[in-house]
Length: 256
Image (tube, rainbow, N blue to C red; front, side, top):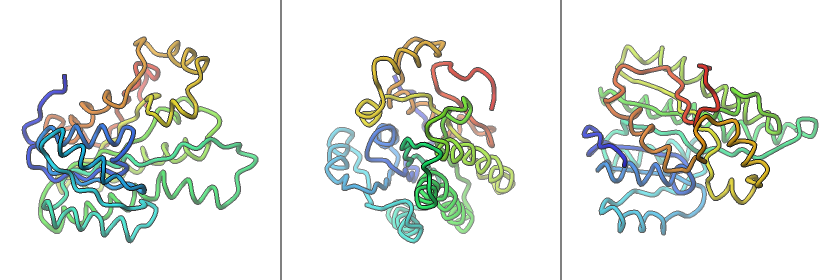
């Protein structure tokens, strides 16, 4: 059962990658709290938005946007603020963990991966925080990282580097904007079995090996990320900032 966070009712929330996987679960989670939710995705998620309106009685605002297009991302944040009020809860979730061999990486692939997995986080934070400061309101940012960089996983070095960068970015911005009442925290999921993960990487052998590393012997689902995200986005965590919270079933058992 997902707890209720009263301060999220009516809050203006913006979720990147909010139409599929973990992001879709987050969009629904915030809608069920009564928040005014805008979400962006590169594909057309209008049907998902209509489904969420029917299921929750709370209609989200879908804005089709490639997060690597900074101008389009800024425009989407502006439209969300115009429709729902100043965005005060930003959730940076969009990511791509495409596997790659380090010796095969060229500059184009490096640029593509960093733009999705790190650049978009910086510029979403920058624009959302500017909006909060201009409106004179406090706000909360949740940046999605990953335990992959804590584990030193091989097979996607640029992705793990970007996630380590997200942690550093989160901590620096928390220090910079904390005096203005703006909080930033990172959430680092373990291996969450989204449909994409099931389709691409989740072989029986890989699943068994990962579960063996977890303290809790249950595979993670997108819905398992909802309550922790709501907690970080709400006043329940009002004295937390600059932190990285792992939600991974106990794979990582020390702070990173």
